[in-house]
Amino acid sequence: MKKNSFYILGVLLYLCTNSYGQINFPDPNFKQALLTHSPIIDTSGNGEIEEAEALNIDRLNLDNKNISSLEGIQFFKNLDILDCSDNNIKKINDSQTYTLTKLRFLTARRNQISSIDVRNCKLWGLHLEGNPIKYAYLTGSSTFQMEGRWGIIFDLNNIEYVCINNDQYMPQSNNVDHRYFWNRIGSALHIGECTIVTTPVCPIINFPDPNFKQALLNISPAIDTDGDGEICIEEAEIVTYLPLDGKNINDVTGIEYFINIEVLKLNDNNIVSADLSNNLKIRNLSVINNNLTNLNVTNNEALVSLYASNNKLTSIDISTNKSLKVLHLYDNNISQLDASNLTQLTFIGIDNNSLTSLNITNCYTLEAIQARNNQLSQLDISTNSNLGVLQVPNNKLTGLNITSNNSKLKQLLINQNLINKIDIRNCNSMSRLDIRNNPNLKEAFLTGSHSFYSSFDNFGDLTRDNYISINNCPKLNFVCVNNVSFFNDIKNYITGMYPLCTVNTDCTLPRNDFSSYFILSPNPTTGSMILSKKDTGTTASTADIFNAQTGSFVKSVNLLFGGGFGNLSFKKTTTSTTTQRLGNPINLEDGAPINVTDLATGSYIFRVNSNRGTHTTNFIKM
Image (tube, rainbow, N blue to C red):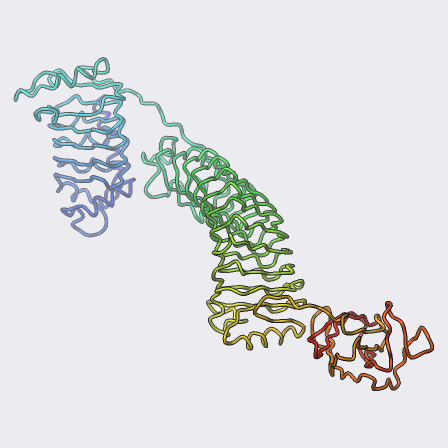
């Protein structure tokens, strides 16, 4: 029977080498440790360890090399000393040690060794502290003859079976006596022949997706530490990092057994659903560019960063992820997001979704929000005292209340919305402000220590580090800016786009007192109107007409008060030259005729520049 056993081991030994005598090491970390060993083992320099090279080695120092398996050590037949502490080795079995007949000193502290078989070795010293040893097969020629505790030592907390022979139990010829240690083992100690205990089989994990399984088998360092082509639960539980980007994975069933993973990368796959409720230690999760419609992270309270952009998510529950700091959900179809419990959150990226609601109250540490191209009609940022960047172009926001609690706001992109007012006077130093394409915007309060005032070149140039852009806001009629040296340039820049806009530095809204000085009648009109003064002290020589919808200039008219009406015709309510409109007497002979027969039907703005100031009113051309 023993002869047959050696025959089987010989076959295994043959299978572990190739036709060139190169040794196969299933654990790449073990191989790498050998290739970088000092003194050099790979004397041929071919990046492989050959049998002949292994035979030249009598000592190996492999401490702290992240080794999971010692498979291949059996070719180091002349080994005298083996140090392999501080690794992840789970077992040292007979197939690895049966050729190590010259091995005298084995030190493997602080690993995961549960079973060791050194029956063919001649050990003088065996040090296994810090391992969960259950089974130790020690019979044979080993004497453990080093003095004191240095001959043999391992932890007894988990011990279930130890076998030694009588000579090993009794004092050695040099009077070294280990009976105190042996007796501490108690009933688990067996003196005589060893009975190999069949250890419980580690349950194999079923992975329905073969691509997922193969990706796990290909990971380095190896998860499949015993090289059997399967991943069992114990092997999965050791893993803390899983890089699985671009592996054509469709189904991650089986991920629930990786209970200790802290980093999981599944980018660029075809995953539809992922339930990570059993992976409680995940801190960093990245599932970008999949087909996810469901992502369960409700139990992942340790989660710090979540990258789930470019998927098909319509909703996601992040209410329990209270350690979350970074959240990327770009390019999904999410309609509502409640982040109100995430008091450590610093960044939200949720561009290109269908958001109608974004709750960020209580996100006191939030520094940046990117929510472009959504359907938001309102957004409360009153509690976000650390917010520095807010980018919400192309939404449906009707307003944004920037309070004194938002003094750190430096970048505000709110173009393509429906706001009617913008006020950044509570911000300490705005560097970028984009309020373009807001069709309802009427008032803009822009004073403050903002860096876009450093140069007039910043006005309208979005390529600069500091800029402000206010193009395409047809209803803009008031802008308050800083009293800087180039104020006139700013004023001309704004009024060049919006001729009806008042620009000042004291933020006092202009009074629209047209009715105090003038009457424009009839309104609506079919083609002709009269502008009458209410007192003789008011003088004016010109008026301008603008399109009320676009704010664009239409034409100017000269005002000739009492200058005759030519061919203009008016429908009068009396036969006299004085008519009545809205209870106000109008003296046609003192009025100025306004001919608008050339205007298209629509709504217009009429602006008069008088000695009293600038006055505007609206009229309708029928």
